[in-house]
Image 1 (cartoon, rainbow, N blue to C red):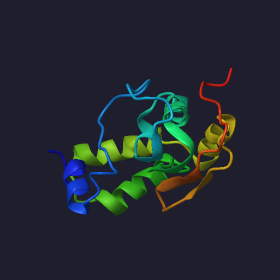
Image 2 (cartoon, rainbow, N blue to C red):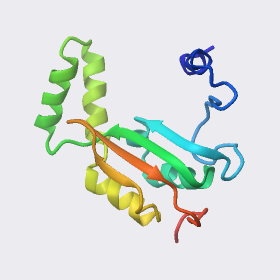
Image 3 (cartoon, helix red, strand yellow):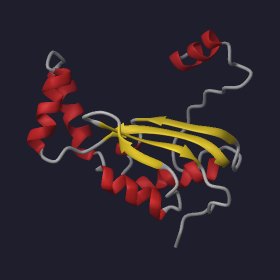
Length: 150
């Protein structure tokens, strides 16, 4: 049993919450089958972030609650190194380098806003959540496209 499943059991919500592990794109799940979509630190791992946003639209019901948090790319490599030293100074060098690379691979707030707007999700709110994270939250619109735009 993984930590997510343990948390669901401990919270007593097994009747309402299912933990799934799968790979993007085209998760083997029914269309518009989720009342909520929550993701943490996935988008910066996507070479094409539209794969993520398309799955969000494909799987979330119209009006579904959305909460997405991820790293954002700092304005310079020097700032990324400073963030690593601020939060991971005592970690192993390989973990510090992974954190640095993740920061450099992340999207800026402007890029994320453009991604959600171009996918027809302009009603979602996108803002900074910390000195290294952005958050997108809100509800999927009613009647949003289920397939990628041309």
